[in-house]
Length: 324
Image 1 (tube, rainbow, N blue to C red):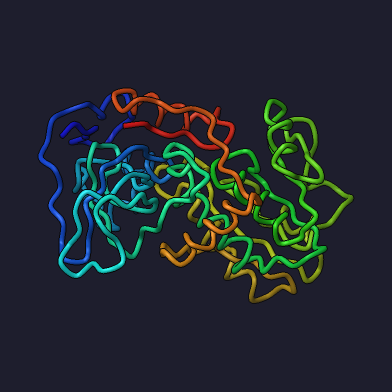
Image 2 (cartoon, rainbow, N blue to C red):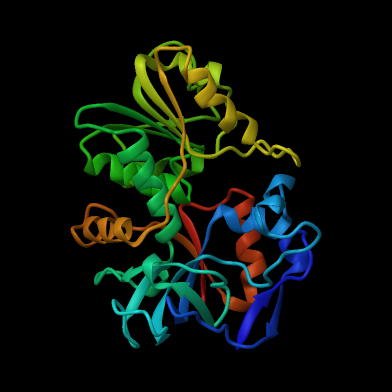
């Protein structure tokens, strides 16, 4: 099969290349997916570069990547099932989380896949698995968003943010989205009640306060974010992209729950859970029309390095996907 592989850590254009490799083997609880499309999430870049360095200690390989094929978000059709799999059959159209979706075939645990929403193409479905589950769990579980609450979403135009805006609206919140000038129209179209251009306005200045803040991949200090949080409000740190080679935003993720013990506000670091049950929740939201994946660009498999670079540079209005 054809796949995008890498043998060393580095930037996409330097280390990723198209090659012919063997199809992956599947275990008893896995399925083989014929990949039609693959989502490009921020985790792809971190694993590809091995940055920040602690990520290499998490089983991805100290000096070189332990696995050669990147990509974890997938939409496709089941080609074969393991002997213990009873919930899926060959031919089923599925979406979910796998290992190595930048390829014609990928192996996946059956409990990380769900039937594809009937109203989505493979491209749109591949944009959802990790980004949508992250947004859902940030809004529903960590933020515990309720109808009428004022919710601020920093990074509203990105992969996770575009889902978070729509999910928060589905939960009845008054949503303010933060993004750059060129993406204001997108965030409005997603249903945000208010939008803030962070290139022109200081979102942590005096004025409006929020019951829940979702900071998606931001770099603002906890002190600044707490200024616009209500006295008993909740701040959810979904990620951090400070760019450091050693911590890369992890320091803020660690400090938030520690500081939360000493203040009235609830400061939470999101720990997302990958599971098929929440994929089914997303399917319901998507099929009901409350959530629609926002796909900016689709690249063919051989242009995967360009897709990863485009996502990393922050140009994307929503998600970037790879078609196979």
